[in-house]
Image 1 (cartoon, helix red, strand yellow):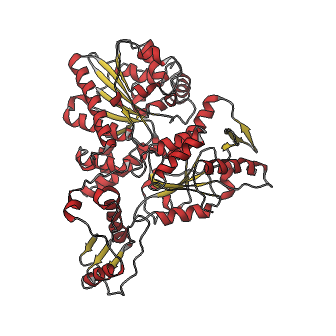
Image 2 (image 1 turned 135 degrees about the horizontal axis):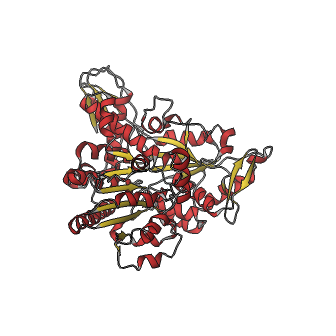
Image 3 (image 1 turned 90 degrees about the vertical axis):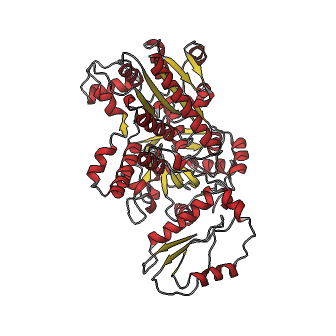
Length: 569
């Protein structure tokens, strides 16, 4: 893999990272390159001549980038071929093998915003086919609603990392382009996600078009909107929204009646507000005299905060207030991880409810190396160590996971596995307050855009492994490599998980079932953020500190080992 920098006099770190990224992209996403050695070479044409270098290959057979100049390129290639035996291969067959990129959500959003098309990021494997079929089904519902002048709602379910947000962005983008009169919009209540995506699009647009960042930001803001701003615009009035199609990302995180009423009374001065967020949002769209479609993207086991309703409030509102709406659901909505609190079978038996298997995104696209990762994490969190161990045997060759009791070892592991501009960082539960003696401050505020987007030279970025991101910051986003830091808030006691929260000077047991679920889901989110691999840091604790008793950590470490995860130490 050769990258030329014509006229360059040095091998800059940026250029070396660039050619390294190209080599990794070829290795990971081109079928013909999965099993062949790849050597990335940077040719800075006017650089000084240097002695030929020894090659270092990583486990995946991608060498670390080397630099040369225009005169020494030939000798360097001869040197490489003399030092390593390369297998014979069929070049014509290699050229015909498919390229199946799996972009991060930030990369995907940039392509969608720039081209209004997913062609550049399309794939032909099961995950991409699933994604296309899902959006085709939703588009069919929208077209039918427009033709029949009816109101409809689609519930799209999906495993962690299956591309729900990408599906929503793609849908809103295409409908806006092909059906301007629909004014389709993508809404998310996930503030860090909105902030990171907006900042990424703003930076990209400003750089590409040579305009000011402020000018670029004005245009970007309409592409991705915050659900709270949309909601507040229609409180206290009867205005009819211009949008005919609304995509709600992470709809399971919409607020219950109690949470919404409390917020609206305290923050918006609406003393008589008495609706759940789903009920109010549906009532706003119901103001249309003719038709509209609401698309709810729902992640299983993703509710992580007090007052998040799951799908219960959406269904309750449909049953009580909007009996004329047509409902299209994934059959997987009956699974317990989607959190419906009533008799789901009664709801599904209604003649207006239509089940469609294509409304479920079953394949994880976040981790292109291990599509079974979400299944493994589910078993681990559900205390099914035998099933977790069996699944780990399937994924561990392509998706490394390791355990350590030493934070320094975890940091070194992350730095040694990431190459080029692959992003890595530390994550921890927002309740992991007793990781502070280890130098992990979960209460310290971080700026999500800087943490996720800035380069390795910026101390605010994830690369520095100083600032740790909680489940609230990383939900919906992703890293290439993650260091998951485990505390006593969710620890294993040998027979099952114990949940507790740190108040004042001591841990207190969590007995309320909803709070236990939020804590369980927090770790589910943390364990499904990495695209390529992760290291789990479980402290040793201290016998001299009752708030960090080894009993809060040793059981977790042993349980994770029983799930098949090997230890670095």
